[in-house]
Image 1: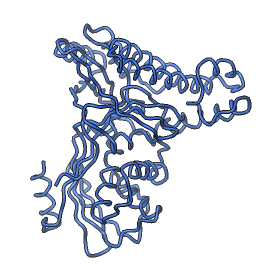
Image 2: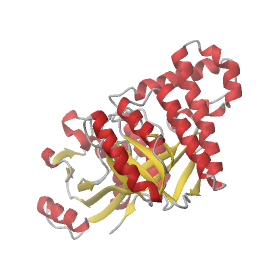
Image 3: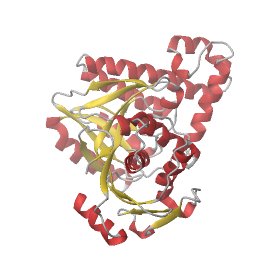
Image 4: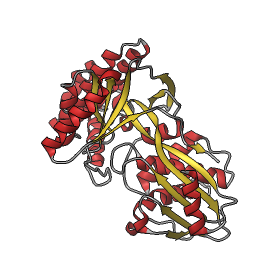
Length: 389
């Protein structure tokens, strides 16, 4: 990939002698969905698929973005004088938002830069192509402009800040944190209220992680994601009138059941119930993994999907079909929706000797039921964003 990126970079922008190559992974969340903005725990891991970027400083104030995946947009040019969102920039609003966020945080660039990207994360799949691109841009800017004071955690927070305030999606910290802080063969057990985390080895013995792409694209900005966040905020505000908590993640189920009536709205009560229960499921799942109890981990994944489907209502018909098919396939330890929801992917843990049957059986049945094919990825857990060359 390095060769192709540099070839395209040279074709568009000339000399590549001072250009560098960077990589930023996608991520999958094993359990702990929609808990990150509710002060709960999450358990994501970085993947070995992701976004590659070649970049080089310029001598003027122009910034050029080019995607080899979306070459129909051509080179998108902006200047350091106008770091504002424009709908016609499309995908480039994500890296541009990071440049804007750097400036907002006091790291104003003295010159522009050229950037060519190529990624192998399916767009709209729920594997965090946007966070991957945001953290990639952060790593590039830190490196090109020698901003050594910024840590990888800082870059994750800047990526989240840009997505919240520039691109208008009120996401939590999980995606950017997983992309920035990933570690091969480990998932990240992260307390999103404090950003305290630990790496937990993912030892699946005779099983692998399979991601199934429903091929139903989602857009968190245009979906009910922000609505869900507001519903949880309203539920929290009501609960705070009777119990001393900073976030829904501070509650256990017993306390929630005792005080839930104060919420006064059955929909908001459902949303809060998911946030509280999912946080506990995540804690229990990591404990199960540490004890090599993969079967319990799988059961908790299944319970997570039921909660996301029924209480949080972020699934969709196609995803539910995939999960139901997985639950009824021999050799599947657990399966659930992953990511923001409203389409995207499922994540399943499947025994090695059942993987071929899993892909063939579910692939055939899914196409019969919905009329289009799913895509399957057997994934490896990789390291976080970094400069390669």
